[in-house]
Amino acid sequence: MSTVPAVLVAGLVAFPRAVPDAVGRLGSLLESFLPWLGLVVVVLLVAAVLRRSGVALLALLLPVAAWTHQFGGLLLPAGEPGPRDLVVVQHNVSDENPDPAGTARALADAGPDLIALEELVSPAREVYARTLAPDYPHHAVHGTVGLWSKHPLTGIRPVDIKPRAITETWSRGLRAVVRTPYGDIAAYVAHLPSVRVGASGLASSWRDESAGLLGRVIAAEEQDRVLLLGDLNGTVDDRGLTPLTSRLNTAERGFAFSFPAAFPVARIDQVMARAGTVARIGTLPATGSDHLPVIARVRPSAQ
Image 1 (tube, rainbow, N blue to C red):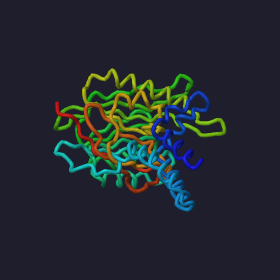
Image 2: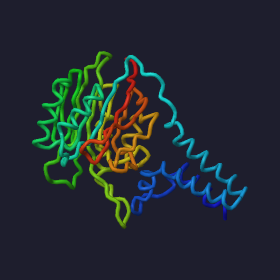
Image 3: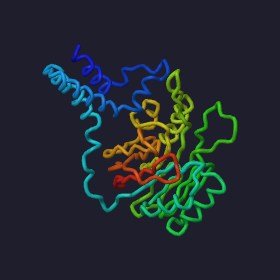
Image 4: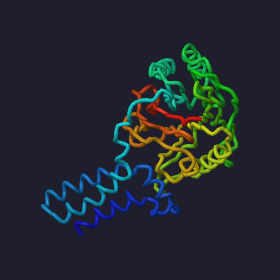
C-alpha cells in the first residue's frame, strides 16, 4: 500500500484528463490546481522517510518525474530578452479598486508596451485613461475591458463572447491591431465569465461557452500574429480553455499565480500568442485589486 498514493499522484499529474468532467467538472477542478500536487509528493516523501521505507521512496520517483515533465520547464531561466520582444501587462483591476490612479501608475512604472485591463467601470475608467495617457497615448475601451499601447492601434472593434443565457448588457471583449515597429499584431483583450466552486463541483459552463466563442473568433483572425491578454478565469491546464490553448502558445517560463492576490493559488490572468512565444510570465506587486498584475515578455515571430 505504500506505493499506491505515489502511483495515484503520478497518474493524476501525467494524465489529468483521465478524470471525467461529466459530474461536477471534477477534471477541470483538478487541472485548475494541478501544480499543487507537488506538495502531495513532499508529504509522501516525509512519510516515507519517517517510515524508513525504501520501496515508498523508490515509488516517489514516478510522481517526481511526472511533475518535472509537466511543470519543471516553468522553473528554468527564460534567457536574454531579444530586440523584438514586447513587454505586456495584464490586470483585472477590480471594479471595487479603491485607488485606480495608484494602480495605473504602478502598471505604467513597469514600462510595458501594452497594458490590458478588465473590470473598468466609471468613474474609475476615466481615471485610468487620464493617468495612463502620458505614456500610453493609444487606447481602446469597449464595455469593461481596455487596451493601452505605446504603439498606434487600428482595426478596433468589440468581440462578442457573451454566453446565450446572459440577457443584460455585457461587453467583455475587444480586438485591435497594434502597429509595432516589427509589424502588425492582432491583440485581443477578454474577460471570461467567473467560475464557482461549490458542493456540486466546478460551475464553469458560461466560462467554457465564452472560451469557445473567443476561440472561434481567433481561429478566423486574418492577422498571422495574435496576442491574447485577459482574465480568463481558468488556468492553462484547465480543459475548459482548450478552444484557446489549442490555438495559442502559453508561457514557457514562470508560474505567476495571480489569484487571489492575498494568497495566490492559480494563474487565471493569461497572456497567449499565435505566431510567437510567451518567453516568460511573472507577477507585479499587489495593487488595490483582488488579482495580481501579470507581466510577460512576448517574442513575435518574424514576418
